[in-house]
Image (cartoon, rainbow, N blue to C red):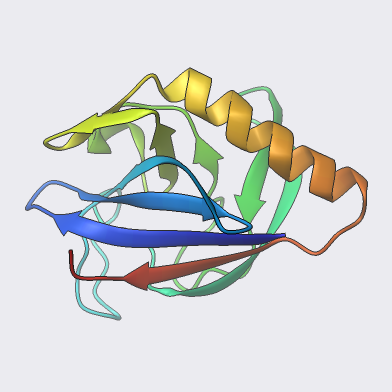
Length: 137
C-alpha cells in the first residue's frame, strides 16, 4: 500500500495537507507546526518529510489497535488517529473529512475509512509505506 501525505497549508500553529492512498485522495490531515529539519519542540513539531513504514499495534493511549509509523527520527509513538486541532496531535497525524484554519473536522469518520484500508493491507501482509512531502499549493 502506498500512502502519500502531501502538506500544503502552513500556519504558526499547524500543518495541513491531503492523505492519498494508492492514488485516491482520502481526506485532509492536520499535524503540529512544521519546523526546519532537526528542530523539534516537544508536542509542537510535525515529523520530517520522508518515507515511513506503517504497522498496526496496540495503543496504550487509545486502548485499541492503531496505525503507527516506524523509525521516525526524533519521535516515538507517531500514529494516525482522530482529532481536531494541533493540541490533539503531539507529533501524530490527524485525519478529517473537512478542514478549516488550524483544524480538521469529522475526524472519526475519516479515521475509520483510512484505518479500514490500512488494516486490510496489514491483514494481507502487504507492505505499507507512508511518504510525507512538503508541497506548495
